[in-house]
Length: 248
Ligand SMILES: [Cu+2]
Image (cartoon, rainbow, N blue to C red; front, side, top):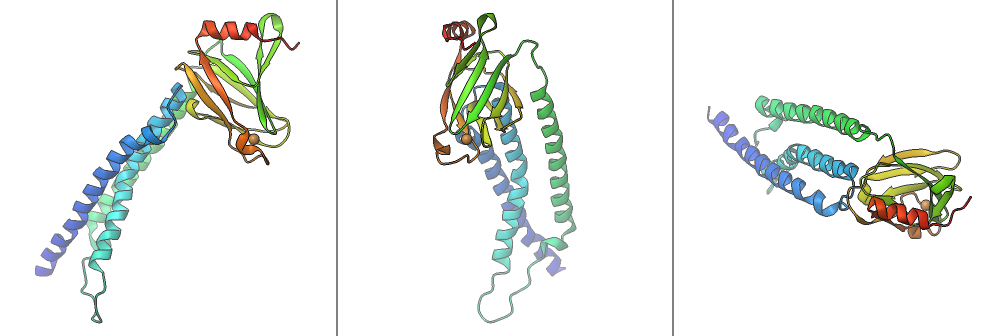
């Protein structure tokens, strides 16, 4: 009787610790991604940041459980002196704890699976009938961007210009080794491979500049394979496009 009461009391500290660490994890998860991830300039990036927050918040109780168990065990099984340590109640012998732990993990995992599939579906839905097609070519160690210019001409630029509010479809390839086409603020990242095209889309929703980087180590000057992108108003974009020299 006494022993059972002691066990109850003792495991209570584990529950309290679990709750405190969960609250801490949830608060950090709510605010950290906003500070640590690039500022969003597209709906895809907004969805990526939201997904990061949802996944971090959902992982918080599980991570908190692991840390709480670790601290609880370190405190209760600490060996002091030469004597045999006093036995503390084992967490695994508490049916309530095991059921809570398992159910929490299962429910959160199923929720994340549903969220992930839903986010993928949302990101792939709503493809516009008139997207801007930009051909992206990576080579050691520059990016170049080809657009359809006025009157069937082709326009090429080493800076990426995009209009606000219109879906952009990137057709990406490489002339040599594998590069990684990455627009951090747009939530766009896909490999550029020689001899084949990869495709990715986004819709910029904020005016301003963004980064264009390479995510695959592609040789000596990989770190310098960076350039800038610009989101312009649709009319400014048309003006820019028309001002470029036609290539053919
Ligand atoms: Cu590269």
